[in-house]
Length: 207
Image (cartoon, rainbow, N blue to C red; front, side, top):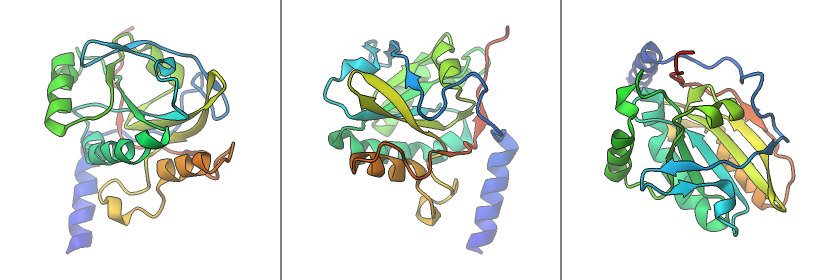
């Protein structure tokens, strides 16, 4: 019965979402240096990678309020920040969708969602979508782990959080956690540097 329910749940998600098939050709690749950015958070303050001098890196989540897959991973993103922020890898969440195409991802809706879920990390709006394009994010959620080298940040991991959308306890591969753990252990390259991100396609502005 549990397997049937899980299969039905995944089928429902896929009915609402578009699977990502590849990273954008012009986006960051593993090993690339990430250019710093400045985006407005739900508290009205501007946030940048260089804003926290004590960090060892970041877990960057391109996510949103409306995607069913993003919602299933929301608690896992919250848990990642709870587990790794104090260890030097805090979460930064970025909402990439065009709000005209997805009104449920408006700035006000972002504020309401973050408050209702008790976000303890910055939730930023990429209104121009320039940062999303620079990273090459295609889906929500789409994860990037970046590690700090001197004053630079380099991409160490790109892709999915884990390999089970429906049940976090059933995930046999926790890609983001494994990557951060290896970086904290002193590795400069992680064992699994990428895994296909599966979720709703980002809602792009009309050209």
